[in-house]
Amino acid sequence: MDSHDKRKRFVLLSSFSYAVTGILTAAQNERNLRFHLISSLIVLVLSFYFSISKLEWIFILFSIGGMFALELMNTAIERVVDLVTAEFHPLAKQAKDIAAGAVFVYSILAVIVGIIIFLPYVLKQF
Ligand SMILES: Nc1ncnc2c1ncn2[C@@H]1O[C@H](COP(=O)(O)OP(=O)(O)OP(=O)(O)O)[C@@H](O)[C@H]1O
Image 1 (cartoon, rainbow, N blue to C red):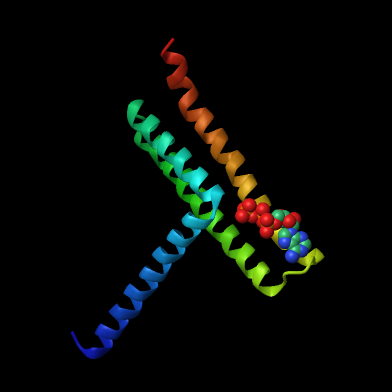
Image 2 (spheres, rainbow, N blue to C red):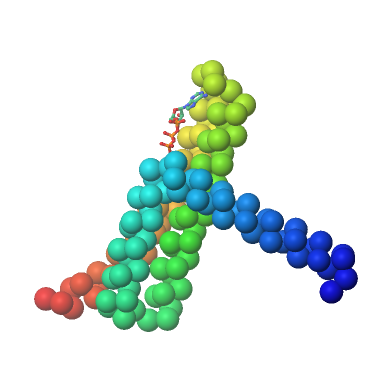
């Protein structure tokens, strides 16, 4: 491995560690993210319990992963807005509210996916 390859590998590993640090920082500071973590664990337990199909797993994993990714992006937007201004600003409000709106839209979708997948399994229990 030449020094150029070593440098590229170092840059890749650094980016990975920055991303992990970002996720851990957000998880420590954001109540919403911890809520998503707990709900995701419950959903994963249910998925194993009901032995859901491969296709259902794909939808569940995309719902969970997408939710986390959006929540992280929302947190990043909140941080940048707070960095730019501590004063009340209509654009700061719009930026935060729109980012929160994106998370809300995806949450509704994830709940609908959860109902479509789990309701038939739950009803079969009775
Ligand atoms: N600088 C600002 N100017 C105008 N409105 C703001 C500003 N900061 C926050 N807001 C408004 O207050 C709301 C709450 O802001 P806050 O910074 O507490 O974020 P949050 O959405 O509650 O974050 P969290 O997900 O951490 O609870 C925002 O959604 C926005 O409507």
